[in-house]
Length: 125
Image (tube, rainbow, N blue to C red; front, side):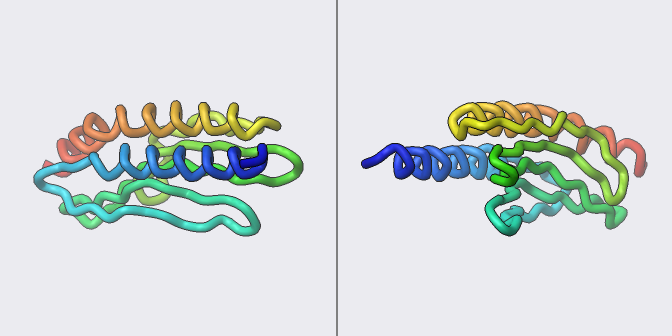
């Protein structure tokens, strides 16, 4: 494989890891749905959305997109229109560096998931 093909394979592997991280998130009292959205022209957002008993949707997600000669990586937790966690948007010229940040951001968002859901459930009670 040439360098571009290896980079594409690395991107697919990173998205697979990220989807796996979010697929492992569960809560016994909250419904969930996996998120996978294409971001034109060359990006993707992956994560998971939980629906709280009061109907609010809480989204845990990361994204990577290629625009303007760089790869842009973001991570966030939102509850409806409220941002609970917004990791800094990173613009990186190298795909491998961007994938490292994507992995880190997926871990950071997933790590905060259980605590965030528990806090939001306590607010309901």
